[in-house]
Length: 180
Image (tube, rainbow, N blue to C red; front, side, top):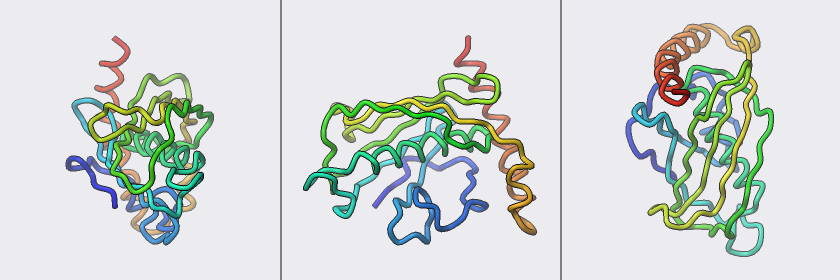
């Protein structure tokens, strides 16, 4: 259904709940999004083919589903950068009706960090990048570790701290490149 393009960096699926609609592996109705982080470009991407059950108009993906998968891509990127976040704002431009059951490319990349927010952009295109279906941007509010630490049990707290520490090292280098 979806395929990572390269080996992913450390990610948070080990601590995130299995029934998340966007990325949960145990949600039979969910998208089961699985992103790949690219250290050299600082972007997240993956290929995906939307099932027919996500139709809006017959043969085309519902706009809410497209918004959801792009929200997941941007939020997943934030985790790869060592942040736990919640969506603050998002906006999308739907350029062309997006077909179901066709392999597509989803990408997200950081723009900058501003106070307690991370600003990102994203897009959904054909595999070759020639057809742009959706372009968007989002702001994600950075949550303090205490927000989630009381919700994790046992070894998951240690896993979360390790993942965030490793990914923070990538983040420092990436934002230095973007902002210069």
